[in-house]
Length: 201
Ligand SMILES: Cc1cc2nc3c(=O)[nH]c(=O)nc-3n(C[C@H](O)[C@H](O)[C@H](O)COP(=O)(O)O)c2cc1C
Image (tube, rainbow, N blue to C red; front, top):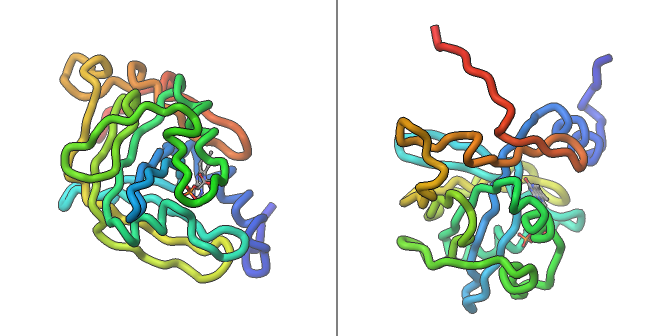
């Protein structure tokens, strides 16, 4: 079958995209409001951008009324954030952090997520995350406008924290030790424990 996207409602477009563009890594993003309240939310429209300069991106879409998510509001006012990666043992609490709390109410406190101070940015990182990228805002690229329109947040990576216990023999992270989750369509997830290797030509 072929799906014509020309007149597809955004919710149907999202269903097809999220069921086919997968598995997607999850950015568990901590930010800070100007009043000093922490915020923590997951985003799976997430990827690295380039290594020169070292950058990554994730996409908070506007809600169904066209309002920006708290993560985006915070980054526009305090242009720093931490992208924490998500292992399987933190999947449930990560998912809890997608609940729509009132602005200014911290998911760290509401869901008992331990926070650790960051080195180069003001928002804290998730203490138990096996890796966390400290970023400053590089650029926000708006895609569309109104309900469900996107805001590509590009962050410049200033530092990364990695647990020594997830490193492999060559000194880089071992996918099985990291045991990160990938998001599939709907409520499905996979992990980085299922792998195979291909030598590059
Ligand atoms: C695994 C997962 C991935 C998600 N990915 C996105 C995403 O890429 N973009 C988005 O706008 N919302 C995404 N959400 C929903 C947000 O986490 C949710 O709207 C959250 O309340 C936003 O929090 P905030 O308003 O504190 O920023 C995702 C939720 C889950 C559980």
